Image (cartoon, rainbow over all chains, first blue to last red; front, side, top):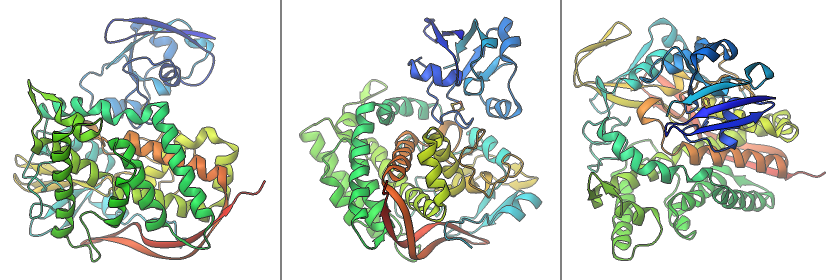
Length: 102
Length: 387
Ligand code: FES
């Protein structure tokens, strides 16, 4: 089980617990504002963009090439950007803090 | 060749040159064929603009049959963003459970209807009906309006022979004008009324602006949805194992929808007008000429997609551009995705198999390229699932 904290664009902090699936699915199921997950997690919509807290990057890993390509055109993207549909929930990411980009 | 196979006519040109050329009513188009170029140019609204003469970014061009600017489609940022924010919540309603329940009921009814028939022409007797009925949900108008839209036939703008048909377009424009008048006199909770009541920079939207949004909503979601629905059914008819898989692994349905959108690419391309002399694929693109973002070609780019010419139902990474890309990505995508998802679920639940009797392919003539985009007609039988 992993605890995942989202900080929305309104600075609201929401912590959720998950055991499997993607971070995007967890966020959508719990109505986290700013994470729409339009494409269902296949990396085609970028409506699941988050900034990982720098100290948590080790846990989540950095973006894959396809993610980077997708994010490259987003003015808001930086080296901590991830599409959270590409982050699987496992014990390894317990405690991460994600700032919702939108 | 299987009837549900959709060849990629762009492959050689995409790999060798990266761009194609086509003529369109004396306003030629440089077609961008590579995934990377298509996405980059879609994002670069300053050099590749949408806010040109109304109708010019559509291919074939509609400048001669339309004066109304489609909104937010033919507006560039930053104003585009204001309009988009205004209409976006309305177009996200398909995410609501009540909306999905109604849509599921509509789709179940239409599938039950065709299961009774010995032969069904899927384009007219299934896809057009489904699209029109579902549009009553998106517009929040009475169900009976769908009868009128069905009576218009499969194309709002195009008639047989592919020529642009101004008379047909007028049917739509006159209808929309009348509906806007009706809603302004007697507002209801429908889309016309909601738009008429919307604020844009401290004033109400004008009737012309409302018309611009409505024309986009009608035109953008007609052929595209009809082709996606019809092609999906043709595919399942020829791939019974895929229908079986949807039954056994319903959790892949969402991914299958995305994959079908990629593979079928119901909208082949969208144009932009070049605002300054530039280069695309080392080819000069002069100011005031047109380029097109060829979604259909980008979606088969082997640099991005493994086995691009196959439907991989559970393709995990699928950065397709079937709904466009960046600022102007498809406003109706939420509605379209729900239609496709519920359609696949319902077919898996109710249909055991299909038989295709005959069909007439719909081939777009893009000058040097001929692209199969769907069917003019396809006669089939739907056999019920017997457990
Ligand atoms: S949900 Fe679409 S890219 Fe992540």
